[in-house]
Length: 300
Image 1: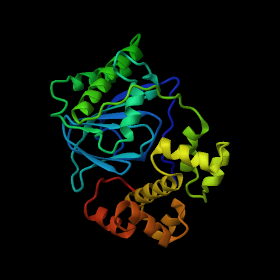
Image 2: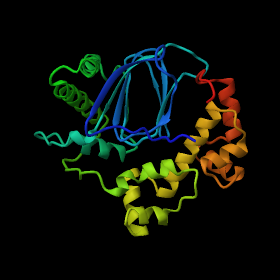
Image 3: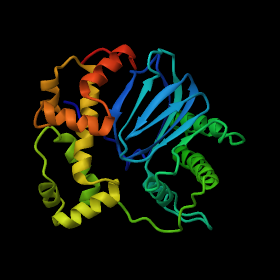
């Protein structure tokens, strides 16, 4: 069982940028999460992006913003094997903590947007028209590749422009974040999801997780919901459902093995929980994905 968590060196590498080519890189990009925020700009082809319980269909010129800690994956369109080319930028949102004039902290703005289900994290090419977004993504990728003197400063400038444009699009949708200061991250509850991910195949109790964070159960439960937007129990369930989905897509394991490997009590528990989040049974999901394959990846 692999972990969904993708580690990164935020201290020494606060920004990453590259052009992803499915003809050269391993694809599809399987479900994973990280502490970075991620931006994807489609250059060629059409991609299906899953981010937590949202799905985005990205055509050429479209952009998706994936907030920190969201579980996401990138696939071909079902039944299609098109060549895909897209820019990826990953960055530490904690670096964007300054208030500038009447513009709120960019980190705070993103966190507030995550709490509003009406705020879009998909941006069509039409919404981005008149803004040189492709130029900024290309600039970030070139700076990251060449690593010229001061490349992080240049990437930071490009990213500020991209993020401010996102704020402008959000304003057209009626969302204006409040002018507030976001607290620094780094407390134990900020990293407990890594522990949950690594031990999701084992029995996990919220009370024990609260103890690991040196918190009472009630305070931990309240803080967890505020930070992650769902209860700790729901988060554990969701992690197990995502790992179940991955095994259904990429392996030939039987349902009994999958239920045990994902951390469910039994097949019945897995089926009930999977249907709760996906509105389909695991068996139906596997049959559906076989008829309309998202990828041609070999089984591990």
